[in-house]
Amino acid sequence: MPKLQAPRGTRDQLPTERAVFLRLEDTARDLAMRYGFQPIETPMFEGSAVYERGVGKATDVVEKELFRVQAGRGESERERWALRPEPTAGIVRAFVQHGMRTWPQPVKLTLTGPMFRYDRPQAGRYRQFWQFDVEVIGDPGPAIDAETIELAMAFFGAVGLTDVRVLVNSIGDAACRPAYIEALAAHFRAHQDELPEPEQARLEISPLRLLDSKDQRMQPLIAAAPTITEHLCDDCQAHFDGLLAHLEGVSIEPRLEPTLVRGLDYYTRTAFEFYRPGAEGQQQALGGGGRYDGLVELLGGQPTPGIGFGIGLDRVALALAEQDAAPAAEPWKPTVVVVGADPDDTVVRLQLATELRGAGLACRPDLSARRLGKQLDGAARLGAHFAVICGDELGAGNVQVKDLMAGTQRQVDVTDLARDLARAHAQHRHGEDG
Ligand code: AMP
Image 1 (cartoon, protein in one colour):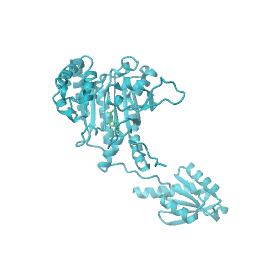
Image 2: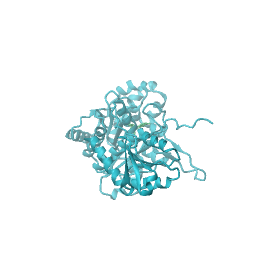
Image 3: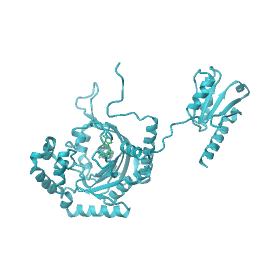
Image 4: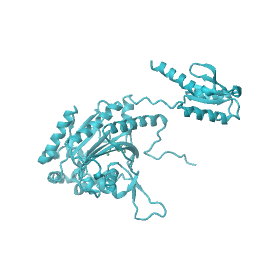
């Protein structure tokens, strides 16, 4: 039989790595809630149209990387689904579907979970990866844009990445971007012969996307292209100035990056990405986001402004590991393991374990028929603090409690066991802290 393995581009998060992710997820959720965001979850797959419209057909994410799901037997041929490549489109779809524009505005939602892109796997680029995402729907900014960016920076700081820089740009709006796109298209058309094949096709559909190209041959042409900053209308300029003033107000020094466009035509004004110094390659962004004032309407709602970001937790975890700052991931340890000398007393072991857990102790019974010595070895290997030994004394209502760390042993009345262990464990931890 061929060896069964996790699919290419995915990986198992074994308990130690999972512990790191859980910490990141907890920090993300706690922080977002402190900023007034409410948690939301949307399905991991949606009708493909949500992404085709909500992310854009001409984007890499949809054109090349969408993880399409085959309809199961009996499903309508017309049903076309895809695994979510990013959270914004699904959340905006939910905003429209559930009439959230009647909720107190702006609606602030946060989601942390797996995303899927059928991408070529490499370091920091997986087919299943995790994002911490926030969306603010119903506020035109620019103050809220700065608050959103500040939240992302606070997250990086809270998890221990203190040197993250934010790159910002304005990509204009429906009033000024068309003229810019014209100028951009003219620039690339003048170099049409030098454009790699896929970029030639994109030039006709979405010239802005060329600025996002990862192709090395495109880099000199991108560097020489006209910038949006020179083409902003007065409103967009005022919005951008407002963003910068508010960022300064919260002590964030952004780097202005005129080629940062995040490529999608209905994205408007504010666009931003997060990098660490020395890790500024196109596959190294820790996260990014932007304003999408056209998206709610595009997905069937009333015109409503919105802004959000997605932070890649896999890349954050990698960055933390690189700087040896991964949150200490202690493997799970039981406080107590209940063992028994009599192979037939598993009912008692189970009962005692249930009682101890009811009293709040992390406890696992050894329910095997192994010899007592093996069970005690097993408890020590798990890193348990105590072993509760069920033996002959049970008849008189007592058990032996072995302190595996101190190497001591004493008899304890079963009716007192939970309280006794909780106290002894707390005292020990107190000693450790002190
Ligand atoms: P994007 O929507 O492509 O800007 O993605 C937002 C963030 O998600 C990126 O900055 C990365 O940190 C992360 N990300 C995107 N795609 C992947 C991937 N294939 N594997 C791991 N992380 C990813």
